[in-house]
Image (cartoon, rainbow, N blue to C red; front, side, top):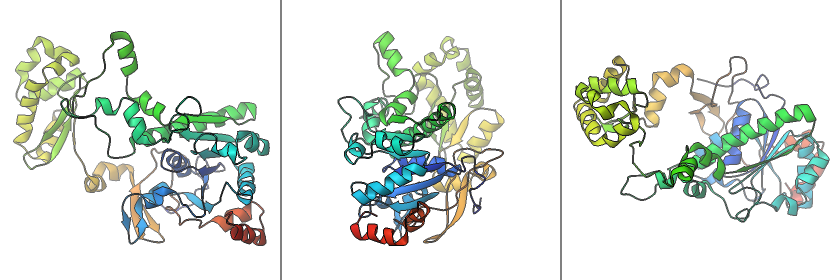
Length: 402
C-alpha cells in the first residue's frame, strides 16, 4: 500500500502534539496520534538526540527504527534546560493541545516548565507524563525502562518453560502497551476538556498498563494465594495450545479456547476417542492432560507440511496459524488485503515498507505522510510558525538553545 497524501483529512487533524519524550512509550504514543493526522512536533536536545536514533539496525548509516518511530513528526531541537529553550518550549505549549514527556519526575519543574507554568501559558493543555513508576511513591525517581516493568509486573515470572528461568520479551512489550494506554488517556483527557475547557495532567507509569493486561493474577493470588506458574507455550486454561513443528521444518501455533474447536482438532488428528474422556469437556482439565493431547496433535502435524496443516485445519474450521517471520508477513495475502504494510518514499533510503496505523476508519483512515526526519530538520520552520524571526532563531542557535 503506497501512502503519500497529506494528513489534512485525518481524524485528528488540527490537534497539535509536542513530543518531548524518548525511548519508547511516549514516542510511540505520539506516533499513534500522528498516524491519525495530529501535527506532532518532536523535541530533542540539540546535542543529544533521542537515543532511539541509534537503537537497533542501521542501513548506510541511517537508523531504521527511527524511520518508523519518528514518522509523521516534525523534528525540532530545543535545550529545555536553557533560558532560550524554556522560552521556545513555553511558546510551543501555548499552541499545543498535548505535551508528552518522560523525564524523571521533578525534571520539568526544575527547569521552570512544570504543569503550573505550562497551564498558565495554555489552560487547555494536556500534559501526558510517562515514567517507569508514576509521579508518586518511593520508586518515582528510579530510572524506568520497559524491561523493569516486564519483570515487576509478573510478566517475566509467568513466561518461559516450567523448568527454565523467567523470560523477557525480545522487544519493548511494556513500552508498546504503555504507549496505547498513553494515547487512550490523552484522548480521554481531551474529551473531558470539551466539557470543562481546561486541560489536566495524565500520569502513566510503564508498569501499570502491562500489569492490567496480564489477566486475573492479582485476584487469583488474593482469593487462592496461588500464582500463575510458567508453562512454556502451553496454557493452564485449555489444551491443545502450543507450537508444533511441521514436516518441512516450519512451525504452527494451535489454540483451542473454545470447546468446539478442541473437539474439531481431535477429530482432525484422528483421536476422536479423547473427546469422550470425562476430563475433555473442561478446558482446565484438558490442560492437565496436555501431554497426551500434544502427542496426538504434534504427531499428526509432524507428518505434514505447514501448508498442508493450515489447509486441513481451515477445512475443519479449527484454529491454527503459521509462525511467521517478517518475510512471511509481507507476503501474506491477508495482510496485503487489509493494507497492513505501507510503502513510502524516504528521502535518505528511497522506498521503504513498514507497518501502518493500528486500525482503519471508514471516513478518516490513518496515513504515513513521511518517515522519521533527520535531527532538527524542522527547527527553523516550526520556530517561524511560533513567531520567532530568523535573527532570533540564529541567536538561539548560537546560544545552544536550539
